Each structure stands twice: as structure tokens, then as C-alpha cells.
Length: 156
Image 1 (cartoon, rainbow, N blue to C red):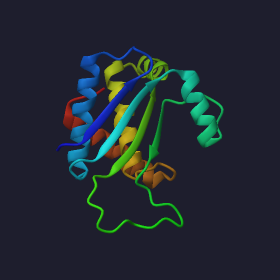
Image 2: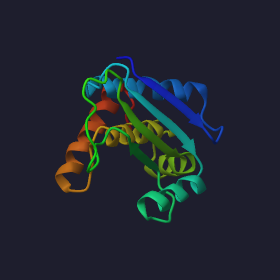
Image 3: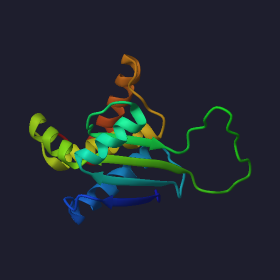
Image 4: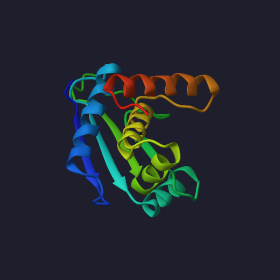
């Protein structure tokens, strides 16, 4: 599965090896979900202040969070499909707070890499339309996350 993944590390705290692992993991998730060839996604690693501002501006919650996703392929009200446009889908952006990831890894008693992987898959599934607003949606999304992480070998 060939998808384009761009990584931006604003924190300079994520190693090349960790980025490579995340790239492989996202490719695995894309394969599981049958994401079209050539799809694009970006993953940014930020600090708590940056994600707090984004969370406030886009979700109305003035507090840092662990991961945000901004889907670009969602069809909004009043938008039209571009028929015949043979362009790969741009799925969107995943924003991960590195301080939150470290904090949660310690809190849950697993590795920083496991937490990064969890947040990347969680964000990626949001880009594909998964959500956890209801108990049923949460059950489906969280089961899919665990399936992908386990299949990849990134377990707790």
C-alpha cells in the first residue's frame, strides 16, 4: 500500500526510527482499511501550547489534548463531488502532542512508542470517518485500533 505520509516534528523530540515505525504503522492501517493508492496524510508533532490553541480554536476546548485530526475528504454541506477528477485523496492532518503522549505512556504503563502508535492510528481512523461519540461508535473504533496495533505488533 503506497500512501504519501508527511511528518513534521515541531518538537525535535521524535527520532527518525520512531517516525519510520509510525510510517509503517500508518501504512498497515491504510492497508487494513483499503485506503486508495496515493492517498496523502500529514502527521505533526507539537507541544502542549500549540495543540491547546488548536483545540480551543477548532473544538472550543481551551486545554491541551493528545491528538487532533482534521479530515480534508469529508464532504461538507453544500459541497459537490468533483466527478472524473483522477487525483489521490488528501485524507487530512493528524496533530499529536508529544508531552501528552509521554505523560499518557507513563500513566498507562506502556512505552512512548506504543502511545505514539496508538495516537497515530486513532487520528488516522478519525480521518477515515471513524468516531467515538456514541458507545457503539467507540466500541467499533477502539476495536479497530486494537486490531491494527496488534496486527502490527505494537501491544501494551
